[in-house]
Length: 251
Image (cartoon, rainbow, N blue to C red; front, top):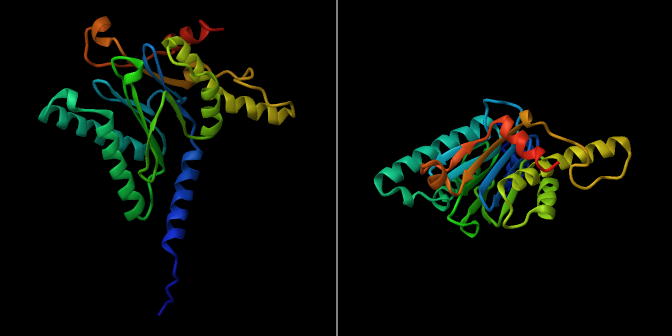
């Protein structure tokens, strides 16, 4: 009879967390940030079809990093949850907080009960009537949830991207400025890597490393969509030309 080796619960949880973090760290980053005109969601993603950012409901959007098949199944489940709740009660009863709680329960259950945890990190954003009414929630692979104030960064080298955002982000900025901050933050790890390779001192900001619009996935939750476009759906995906125009305005 084969001998069974004992592994403590603490070691099992640590091994699962390390496994999930390694999977997430291999992916490119995503940034979500609030501004005067709404909420911007920006991902470094050269694929035109495998989206990291998606619409969930009227005023709610979803962003993710990690394994595509895993976060896509969670996105689809979120859409079903929102549709059923909105149909059963009222559209205003569908909130980012409620959706984030459902995601937290699902991620936590998989992390503790299944053999392999999800290798994903999620963001759920809801645009409010004003910037102070915006909600941005971060969900980790283990089901932990955080209410972020103003902005967040996820994915590979998220700490560097988050630090770049913290140095630039201010309340009251317009959408174009928010997009420029987001892209500059996504460029900062590339600038640091280039500086390290050349042996030069690490620059601040993008340091001349520029991501083309075609390698970015950009969407926005527009605060005044009803007044300006006549629709209750605030989510809008930006084309490469619109992204390039917004970035060029600040150059």
